[in-house]
Every structure is written in structure tokens, then in C-alpha cells.
Image 1 (tube, rainbow, N blue to C red):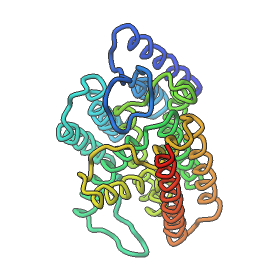
Image 2: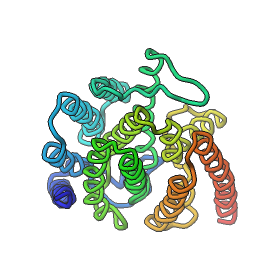
Image 3: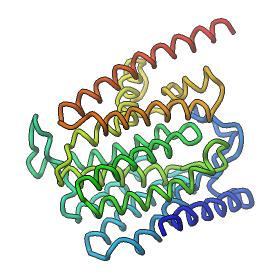
Length: 334
């Protein structure tokens, strides 16, 4: 039955592509002067609609009704709306988007067990600090998934990998509600993914990235209250999280605004050197899949998750600066 979620997402994405082509609604134009842009055609960025509509259908069919679940859905809808308005209008101010996101996340907090507090063996946060940390984490992960959404299939592919890890751990810990929600959205993403990768017929958009990022952070938070280390969440999401952290430091050192978009992310450099969108995304996804599989197979204790995260960050830095040197050399030769 979950395959129907895939079909719904696929069909709604097809409709979004058709609507964009006919009415120029939600178009990511090739003529837009965005430093992070890596495409040369006008593409619909309403892929998030397909995923969310499919998720909504699956959620109300497969998830038993409760007030907690209803507030979770409403919160995710508001977060999705924050990005969707930007996809449609292309003029929503960042502060307005942030306020809408926060309102949605506050609805998520109606779910018991949503707060992230246990950082054993280092500390356990008091409730008021856990509230603000969880709020910051969900906003951060939502935007992190949006930042890496630069290559066909990259952001949605990372989401497929992470939701797969969530499903595996949730089933192992017998957290059925989390596993069921993750299964539903996994098939929804897959319905979008086959249109986004490798040919980029439709983009995820801010709405899709915000929604998936918020849901990932929320489910990882719930798992942290069911015997799963909080460090596991950081470990499986380390690529988008570290991309954001490193980008902020990189821009600050260059004298730029911390949140100013640019075309110097890891995936951007790989594309500029290789010149192949889908293959650049595939290379990152291939490596990240094996990294997450290694985490699932070999990491058990919080210290293991911290060590894996640290190793990833070191490898990322080595690879980034190696690619940067290659890119600079190519520019000098040209």
C-alpha cells in the first residue's frame, strides 16, 4: 500500500511540471542571477508539493489518529508553507520565512517527546534549554537540506539515505510511529526522486527542503527519547550540518556575510571541475550511503557516533581544499 504514496508523489510532480511549463508558476529560471545556480534551463521548483501531498495522503491513511499526530502534521504543513510561498512568489523575506518556520515548529512541540535534551555522556539539558536547542536544531536542519539542494538528486538523495537510517533504527528500537511516518515520506521522496535524478525535470524547492529537513530533525528528536543517542542524529546528518557550519566560517574568513549565497560549496566545486550535474551528485550520494551504512553497522555508543562525525568532517575538509586547488588551477590555465 505504501507504493501508492510513491505513485501520488510521482503524479503530482508531473502535474507541477506541466503547470510550470504552461503558466510559469514556481519556475527556477535559467536567467536568474543566483551564484549557487547550477542549471541552464527553466525548471519547476514545486517538487515539494508532490512529496507533501503524497505524505499527507499516507499520513492520514496509515497513521492512527491522535491529537499529537494532528499537531505534528499541522506543524509540518506550516514549515512547508514557509518554503512554498518563496517558491511561488520568489520575494518572501528571509525573516518572514523564519517566523513562519518557527510557528510551525512550535506546533511540533505539542508532541510529547519532541524535545532534544540528552547529550550523554557530556550533559543533559534542562527543559528550557532543550526547548531552544530543539527549535534551533529543526530550523537549522531545514535550512541545511536547502543549502545542499544544488545538484539533481543530491538533497532528496541524502533525505532518502537518512530516512532509511531512521527506519532501520526505529524498527530496531520498536518505535513504530516513527518508522511508519519515515516509511511514508521515504516513498513520497522516491516518487519525486525519479523525476529529479538524473535529468532534473523538477526541483525540490524551498518548500520540499524545509519540510524534509524539519521532519528529519523532529523524528531524530523523538528517537532520542526512545533510547537512541542524540549523537546518532548528528552523525547521520553530518554532511548537510557540516556544510552549513563550514560555509559560515568560510564566508566570515572571506569577509562576506555568513548567510550570503555563493557557489563555493563542496557539491558546487565538484560540479565546476567535473561539469556533470548528475554524476557529481551520484558521487556524493555513493560515498555518503557507505558512510551511513558504516555508522549503522559499527557505531553503537555515543562516543562512536562522535568519532564517526569527526572523521567525516576531517575527510570533508581534506576533499574540499583539494577540490578548491584543482578548481583554482583550472581557472589559471584557462
